[in-house]
Length: 170
Image 1 (tube, rainbow, N blue to C red):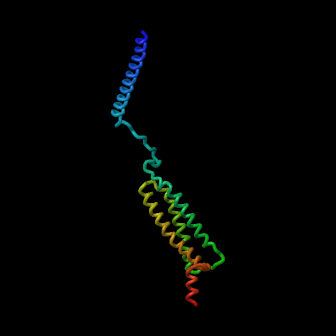
Image 2 (cartoon, rainbow, N blue to C red):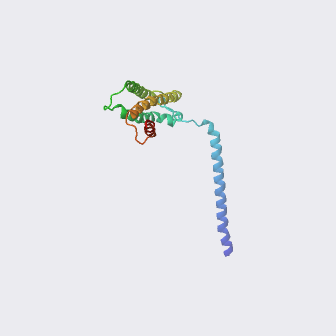
Image 3 (cartoon, rainbow, N blue to C red):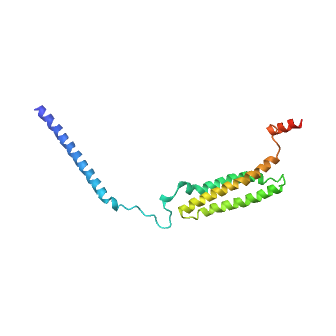
């Protein structure tokens, strides 16, 4: 009798587990069929008019104005380091480079401000390329301006040029 009692609880739990597996399998198949039938009816949410489409935004383009202003600030800091020196009188070359740098800084900053008004992605990408090129063009006169001051300052006593000049003079 004890062996018959042991078999009945096991057979009941087996049938319960089999029935559970079958019900879960039928539910999964039914869900897949319903999703497959309605796949063409799924509609993506529309972006309200006037807002930029988040799918079209490139993270580099979104960060571009902030990045460019940071780069301009760094370049301006270098320029101001030499441009605000009152101990030296500017030569005509330095004065012309200063005028070029001042106008170029103003122009690039204005173009960065224009960037936020553009709504078309292609126009934003092209404008970003143009402003980046303007920044590269601005770096040249700033470097030349700074170089004129570095050369006007004293020559480093450990430089090879100074040693060469001393040897040539002997």
